[in-house]
Amino acid sequence: MVELNGKVVIITGAAMGMGAATAELMAKAGGKVVIADMNEEVGRQQTEKINAAGGTAAFVKVDVSDEKAVEAMVQFAVDTFGRLDGAVNNAARIPDDKPLAELDENVWDHLLAVDLKGVALCLKYEIRQMLKQGGGGSIVNTSSVSGIRPQPANPAYVAAKHGVIGLTRQAAMDYSPSGIRVNSVAPGAIDTPMLQEALIKFGLDPVTYPKQLSMLGRFAQASEVAEGNLWLISDLSSYVTGTVLSIDGGYTAM
Image (cartoon, rainbow, N blue to C red; front, side):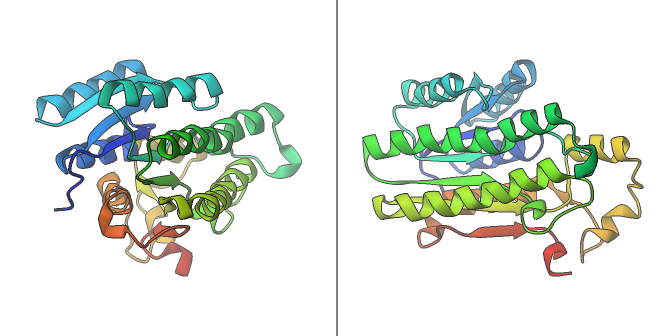
C-alpha cells in the first residue's frame, strides 16, 4: 500500500468518477483530502462517505474557471489542514461533438475555460502555496488520450487536453528546481458517469465501442486511474516530473 502519511491533497472534480475514486484511495493511504467540486450535494456526500470510513476529508465548492474561487479553494485547504502537499487537477466537462467547421463558440469558450484555463489557475495558486511554505510538492493534471492523439469532432476537448500536457511540462520546467513535481495522467476510456453520458449523447454501442479503444477490450475502472494519481502524488515517484502517464489499455500504442 502506498502511504501518504498525512499529506494534504486537493482533488478537483472529486464528487464523482475518477476524482471521487482518487479521493477515496488517497484517504485510505493516509492522506487528508480536499474534495473540490461544483456539485455541492454530491461532493458533501462523498466527503461524508470518506470520513465515515475513517478517512479525513473536507469539501469546498469551486468553479475552477473562476480565479477568485480557485484562490479561495487553496486557502480553504490551508485553513483546514495547515498546508498543501499535493493536488490532482481533474475537473473537466463532457467533450464537444462537432467538427471545426461547425464549431459552437459558446461550447468552445466554456470547455476551454474549465478544462484548460481551470488547470492553469489551479496550478497558479497551488504552486504559490507550495513555494510559500517550502518543502516542495506534487501536482497531477488530468489530460486524456485526446491530449496525445485527436478524436473525431472534438476540437475543443482535443485542444484543451493537448494544452494540459503543455502546461504540465511548462510547470515542471519552471518549478521542479523548487522541489515541486508536476505530471499528467492521460486516461483512455474510463467507465465514469461522464463517459456513460457521452455514450448516450453520441449514440455509441457500450459493447463494441470498448474494443475500439483498448488493447484489453474493456473500459477501465475509475479506481485504475486513481492508482496512477496516488503513485504520482506519493514519494514513490520522487524522480518523476514533466511526464505523461497513459492509463489507456494500450490505446495510444494501437
